Image 1 (cartoon, rainbow, N blue to C red):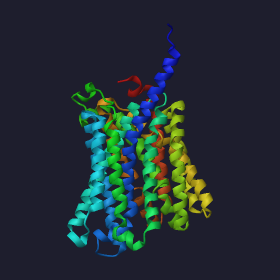
Image 2: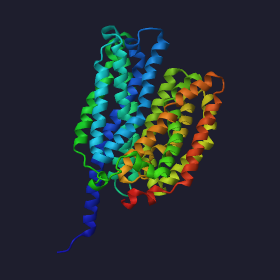
Image 3: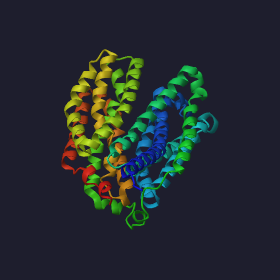
Image 4: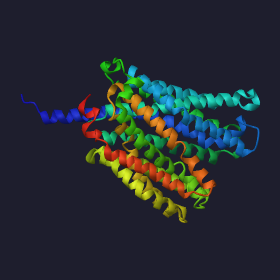
Amino acid sequence: MTVDTFGQSVVTRSSETRRCIKAIVGASSGNLVEWFDFFVYSFCSIYFAHAFFPGGNTNTQLLNTAGGFATGFLMRPIGGWMFGRIADRYGRRHSMIVSVLMMCTGSLVIALLPTYASIGTAAPVLLLVARCFQGLSVGGEYGTSATYMSEVTVAGRKGFFASFQYVTVITGQVAALLVVIVLQTMLTDQELRAWGWRVPFAIGAVAAVVSLYLRRSLEETSSTASRNREDAGTLRGLLMHKRALATVIGFTAGGSLAFYTFTTYMQKYLVNTAGMNAKSASTVMSLALVVFMLMQPLFGALSDRIGRRMSMILFGVLAATCTVPLMYALKSVSSPYAAFGWVMAALLIVSFYTSISGLIKAEMFPPEVRALGVGLSYAIANAIFGGSAEYVALWLKAVGIEPAFYWYVTALCVIAGVVAICMRDPSKEGYLRSGR
């Protein structure tokens, strides 16, 4: 009897692919829920600000809720450290379950939280506490899910499969926006302010339960040996890899700033600077985000062919040379079609970074500090540069030097490009390839 080794290899590859897809769905489901819940707060704040901060005018109320949004960003480094340690010492699966439970708790609390009229100052305090829970959860989710997806993916197709992490980040943002739009269509403004704003948070809490169910069946990808190492999940162990840490922070700073500039801030830029009406700007950005989401697997697959380092170099060089011209073009745009074209040109460049963002970071660190290294370095750079993008842009516009923001983004992208040129190619020489 002969053995069809080719047939066996095809069956094995098919089985591996199915296992990988199942794992990616389970891991990325939590990522989608976490980002949905995180962005819902921003999109719904106009409707619940008065319920928790009744004093002052509308601007003051929105400023207070914006403080809650900023708190979520500030909690991310703590979440990156806390959940990175859990993932490296107790397992990726355990960390992902705890993070989605924490996000579920935060969303459920906000959905059911009594207003200032019912419990006084306890209402905004509890809102802030719930927001801290969400910030910790999102801060920990990125590093752990990026690590898990990098370890579970099929060799030779890691870029393609790992790109679904940013697919779910964008999907969460788009889903949050669509839920709000549906509610705006179905409910009156008075109903939205009275109780409608609670619905998206309740949806997020339910979705988190579904993600929890999916994640409970995931395989653990870290080994007992790596988890039992003395320096596993410790800052001492992480600091033994200072070059990798500095490299990740360096290209994350530029990548995160570019991402937030051309996604979350761009809608305000089209309205405040280009003079486009709010409805047209919302439509342009909604369509752009959907296309951007669909592009991620294509750019991830491209990185499997040209290498992660080359993808990062292309991002750094193109972003550094094109950001200023693109921002000036968008500043003077009048047609929504032209605006969509220029925004998509920018997002094409950003896709070289976002499609492999989590994977390239994971490939820089050994397994015993991988989740901590990815989560903490990302959270620090993202909180400082990504989270502040909108504030810096609006402040520079307010003081009359808006073009300085274009050059600020360019400078950070230059740094990202230089870091990418100087780094080794982790997809060819990294820990994930060598099995260390």
